[in-house]
View 1 (cartoon, rainbow, N blue to C red):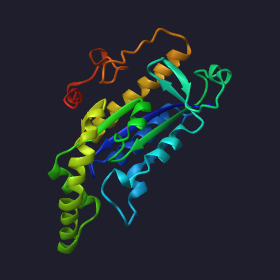
View 2 (tube, rainbow, N blue to C red):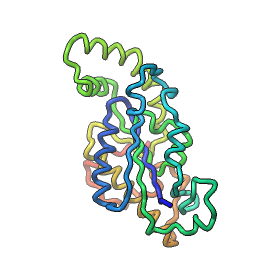
View 3 (cartoon, one colour):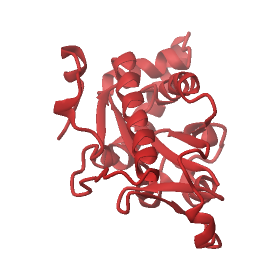
View 4 (cartoon, helix red, strand yellow):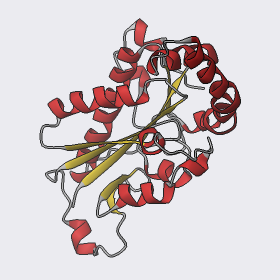
Length: 244
């Protein structure tokens, strides 16, 4: 069985969630050389759909949830242990999981990464990349390589009629589920902060498998596995924490 952790990275349109996920994959592969690191880009799954509704209906969250949970072990912060998400797994198989087992890291990214309650429940780290409306529109113009007035007109129409309402109705509300809220304007700082959080989760799994007294305050919303005051973060990083 694989000890698996799930990191969900959400945010508005064109906030760079996929780019950060790719950067994290590269950095994590150098730290955990034996780990399987997988990216699930939700936006890529629906990008080619012709019947987009610009709502949660564009995503098959049940299928995504089943894909994440298939034949795996997840770290449960409530019991401080690895638990099977497969109901057919025996207690004997569960007890055989140790810190020597390979760890799979799933980086779930996209506008709706923090939308589904079931996925949020099993995600060990939830991040929201924040950005204002004007910045998102400018990023969209660059991302789609708009060259002509006609292309710009089409994009602005889509943004005003579809993307902005979608952001306000479906995506912005997922901000409240995040453990970390990081401005998308500083991707380098954001990726470092997320990387630190993932490393902490891995350390927690190892501590639990050794039977160490590594207790977690599950009543706290913001990164219960992190003691921010104990972390040696420089002034630049600290400006980007949103702990509200």
